Image 1 (cartoon, rainbow, N blue to C red):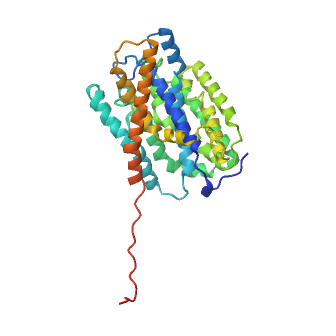
Image 2: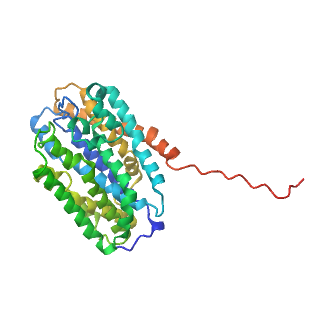
Length: 388
């Protein structure tokens, strides 16, 4: 076990910033190989004409998006807990977190509405979307409306609202009981999927998944059950802070997450959302955080990886427009393998450029200007005796 990390001595965890981009890249690979777009009329996004190759890539990355999203949710709980200052008020916290997600969301919402969503989205879907409430609704045309990846921001919004209420009891948990509570949260995640599989109605069938629209919503989209991943991230952060996270070489954490991914591919569909990979995600986040604390070179903590991690939110949130709408700008028929690779590379480059633009032009200026109140200037006290 590692020594406890004091509040004032918590170092920046650059490796976790770098890993954020890898998670966003997994979501990109999932999106670009889909045979059914979430945007009506649900045509293929996958550009490969070779049916064997197209099918292989779709199966290979079929759980990549789920893994990336689950990683984001756990990482969110970890990072916010790691950086939280005891005694900070809820309002300053809410101010920073809302400014983090809403400007990028509103820009992509407006762009999506102008380009395609305005013509196909009813007001009952886009109105809750603009306020990041749409994933609270079980209707498929609502929870993936306008800019489809934005559904995850509804979960993040719930996480942010709940954090000031959760952090106090989690800080009171004795260090030697943190892993017990991590286990309890994992069991709760399993129970959610048991309910999804056996209790939630299996009809009508979803046009983009092998289960029903309502099952997909409850097991994957609905923000409330996703709180367990956020809480696990908070608990893991406390385990690292209190020295209760075991020292694991990062080289062992990578095979663990690959194994978790293979299990997700083979398990019944709903258990591939997050259950199969949750413990490997915990191992990766904890192991890389501990490596950063020890000052080790992890391969993803350099300057380039940090830059990629910083633009990862923009890279992620623009995919609904760049990938799904961008694919419609190419011929609908699939392409030969060399051309399909070029199309994929073009979509990746455009997504990376758009993600950078969101970060450089929207996210960073907004956070720099408004995330913290400007210090008030105290007027200089005039001297008691004026000199001639």
